[in-house]
Image (cartoon, rainbow, N blue to C red; front, side, top):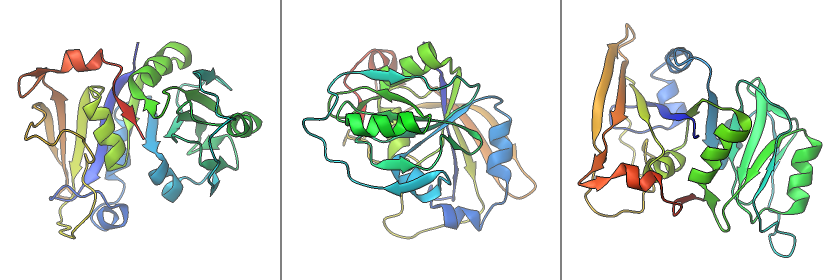
Length: 246
């Protein structure tokens, strides 16, 4: 029941995704390509939201403890064709409104979130999914997006760790990479996929779907994932409940 999930990112030639940097190498190409996918909800992590989301009021620390819900909770504030979805494990982001980027907000948290935080979301008219005891249970959350919110297509739009979490959980159906004509080269910059826990040299195998060269010297690459990663079945990974995101 999970949506069709694709990662859509703009990178430098060396795979870095720092927004100010790639912003110097591109204009609206990223959004033009994204629109070609049609209706889709957009998902990003807490760090990206804290930097870019206009609906964000502030980021605070709400201590978890006795008030943590410690059980799965789903609240549908309103149904929509598209959502702006934010993963926020412990519920640190406070919102000034229930919409961002022209679409209703939907927050995905873990079960460590407090009742007080969920009440804040309710007051703002924000939907939520709280699943996973200590970290967000991504496979379960994706099933809920399809079953209860009717989401058919989901774009993961940053940052590197959230993209890596989806990839490692076996949830990615397609990878859409726009390579901008430039090199970053700075040490320590985040890559498209980052933070994967497998330390072995086991690359994810891809199948090229399409290539487009744009007049602005940007190249748009689209890949699907093959069923194997160095001999391991991705289908088996998709059926596991052992993958979480912080």
